[in-house]
Length: 239
Image (cartoon, rainbow, N blue to C red; front, side, top):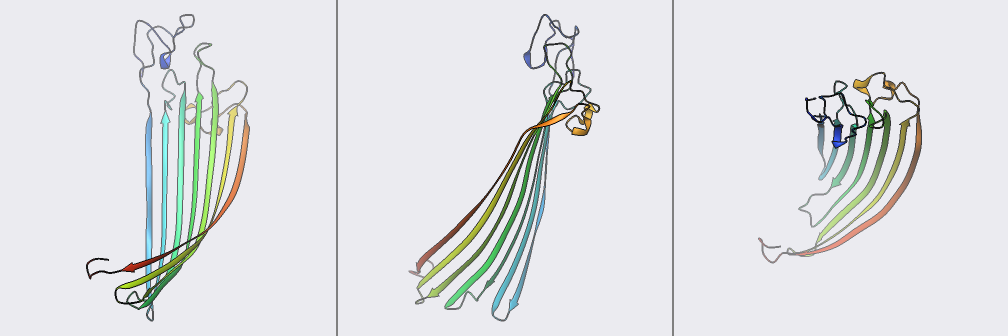
């Protein structure tokens, strides 16, 4: 992580001849890493109710990004350390009932539900200050969360006027609610860390911390969409 050089410098190109590092040391490498986790699944069930078809679909997916830079206490200049985590979870349900597609008049109706929980948390800090004014120990935590919940009812029907001419009409009524929250926290006073290896955890701080700003907002959207589509088949191969 360090290398002997003839002209010691601070990390990120900062040089202060009045406050040099111990001779022979220089920031040599950024130990940044990034891990991405992803998994999920889908279940689809079908039932025949007389001539009707009932279908139920449930899907689940979760993702998590973990990114950090210089987060190792063995690096002599652990300045400008950072860490970010962005877990995301999605759950959806859909159920629909349909008549036989071969009927002259056929239809489908259904309902849909979606729930998403997305969080992003970023930490930054300086773990050590070798000499002033190069750096002062510091800590900050930025947290945001977005919750999304939506539901919809939908339906569509097709009528075959003739063997070649059909008319399809459908509609969808939707309602979505989004809730956004955020908070910004910093350590105060003389910042010290009891556990530099897990410096981003509030439990590793030996200093008090305060939430400088926090906010939350919720909004709901309603919509209705529809379509009417005529279809004419010029031949068995061309619609």
